[in-house]
Length: 215
Ligand code: TMP
Image (cartoon, rainbow, N blue to C red):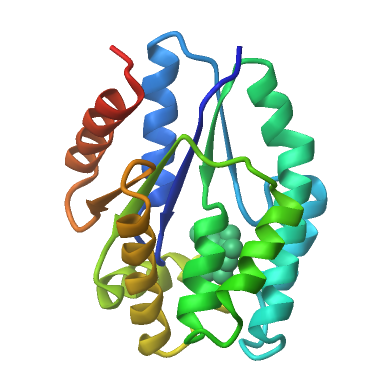
């Protein structure tokens, strides 16, 4: 028996991590075995890649180099953690997956690398595997970025490489997520993330029950 793979996507400061944790608690309370994870950095090696990717100067690599590093992290994440857990029947909730690469490295950078390159990288690193369900948490980037910078204030290692990009990058990336959802409406559900935590959690449970046929 295989578990389900559910991903959470969206821009900065949408509250993905909080919602992922709440959903994991809900699923456990329903007797479902679940693990939570994230990209980049869902594995020990991935943590090293995460540091390279999210810290430091925003122009230290171009979109192609970034996409390659995100797919390397993804491949390690899938083979070491996600696939083994699914094979054991566990459900896996991931804070970001491949839609983030399309939204950030393709749409965010104004399509500087081709969609075909990304599709080829996906085939090499991931094959035919797809999430069973993807929640795209949508928020005006001005609100999301303010939340994200407020959170970074208290951190010793500042993970603000992407936050420090121009608003235009974030607006392109938001449009990208909405286009991904429009192309794959069966897999993706877009939710308004500009609401309180509990209401958003209830929206997520409602969609999950409708789409994955659980009680
Ligand atoms: P996080 O802050 O949500 O953990 O994500 C780390 C950063 O990495 C965030 O700014 C989004 C970015 N990112 C990409 O640009 N491409 C990707 O494929 C992934 C997974 C994340």
